[in-house]
Amino acid sequence: MNLIFLGPPGAGKGTVSQRFIEDVHIPQISTGDLLRDAVSAGSELGVEAKGYMDAGELVPDGLVIGLLQERIAKDDCHDGFILDGFPRTIPQAEALEAANVRIDKVINFDLKDDVIIRRLSGRRIHKASGKIYNVNPEGIPAVPADMAPEELLQRDDDQPEAIANRLVVYRNQTAPLISFYEERNVLATVDANLDLEPITRELKVILGM
Ligand code: AMP
Image (cartoon, rainbow, N blue to C red; front, top):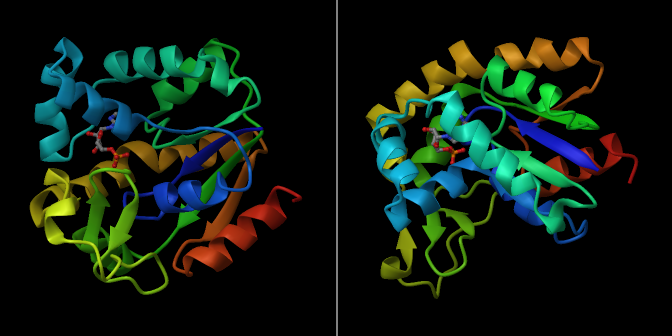
């Protein structure tokens, strides 16, 4: 099962993936995570990507496409994968087609801007596990009461200025993928304003599980 989770930042793509792969044992592949790993490792790619990421801009297609293709060639992708945050541009989607990567379903996470802003500004990442929590939980996992603030980090691009820019970038460069995949008859939309559990249930219905 090869899936794409498409939607604006803060839509819950990562949180739903983490919940979903507890039942379905396929990897969640987030190009954002791969890029952040490259930044932490200080690799040439990471150094080049960092400025774009901090500003909430997209990293150039040429850098991201290679990174993603290398990742999905690994053995653990044999039975499928969830692409979380890729493709984000039409050329990235075309690169998947050119490489004959079959896509079974594209899940479009649809939600309102005010919910996005609340989720992104409250998002915290548990450093040790990579798990996503929120200080404005409203139906998504809350920061556990026994977790110390120093165990958590707030992403540089979850600051107000970068959030606003990421929304503009999403509307201009990523949202056109909705019609791209509609035309290929693989698009299904979930109401991502809902809580984590109902979104996960809706997703399973779409996938016939
Ligand atoms: P994310 O964790 O998915 O929100 O991604 C964080 C940042 O990484 C984005 O704001 C972009 O700067 C960069 N990024 C992640 N995935 C892509 C992609 N598919 N294409 C271009 N840039 C990306």
